Image 1: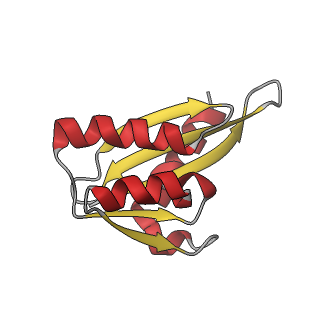
Image 2: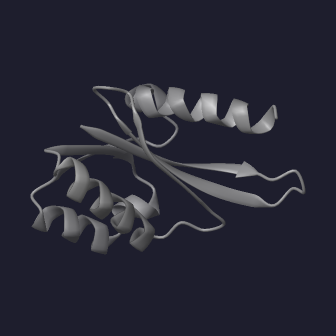
Image 3: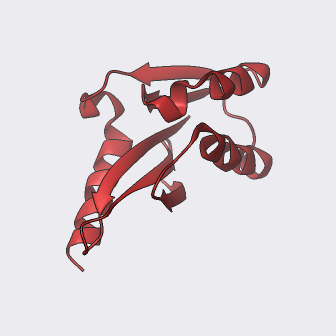
Length: 113
């Protein structure tokens, strides 16, 4: 199963940016990180498409209910590929602990350099 999430951070100059992180829950390996000022549902599809080609299509994907993940185009695309989605409640990082822990460490690394 793969988990993905979007984290918001700031540059040294104070400008916000977002990172889309995707990890494998079994190996806890980071499969992809995409950093942009804005992350769209198309960005999500492109990252998942690449991973599905090289790693195979997973049975489940876990994410929060962010607009990037619940967009009709993403849901339709995943449904066409018969990938089940497990959505967690917002502000419930313990329900998606692996990605939450990874994002916390990533944020620490980004802000302490």
